[in-house]
Image 1 (cartoon, helix red, strand yellow):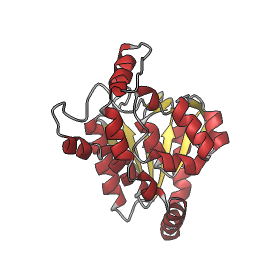
Image 2 (cartoon, rainbow, N blue to C red):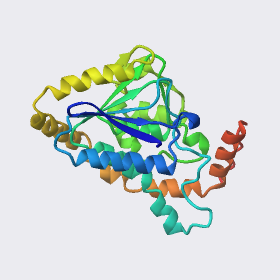
Image 3 (cartoon, rainbow, N blue to C red):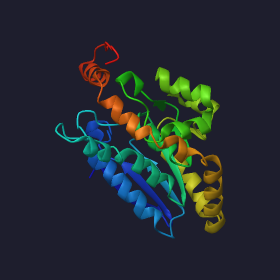
Length: 260
């Protein structure tokens, strides 16, 4: 199994991305499993808090570029349909009515960063880093990420994180509001569990109602902004620059972009 689910205590569940041999990369099967689990947990009234975790040293390296999500001979409409998987994953986690906490140790890259942004809280270990390398790979940042990111850090920092693609260390993430708490190295999950236990001790109805009210207030325009990001992603992934960006990444060389 690429994803595991365990009950830590009454009302508290831990979801773990578990592909250590692939650096917890998000292949189509892992994305589907994470989406199904989120929808199942979201439908339950007894859930108080959900923790999303990776490993002690790696949260996730993001999308598994070695496992294409779309067949080479797929039609345009089939490609567009397949590209729903990432946005649907993030939406499923965002729509869990219980509180969600992302426990991040090690690096959290690309699609994994997008998923972390869909959670209510992010707790980072001392060695954790966040990074969005999509533009350097020849694609736009999809998965309905930019409105969530901008709501947390503001427009200039959202552009800086996305355009430059530099890693954001835990201390900087805390300073910018990307992270809500810092833990010792390898200690993000332990601290997340302590937060979850505090949440589980609270009356569940007002907690859920407050989460929904805050999310609707902060994300009132997200749907309007996001409606084209999947098509933008489709367009960029059909470009020569995308082919070059991925080939250079896999070949560990400097890409040569030419706007084709």
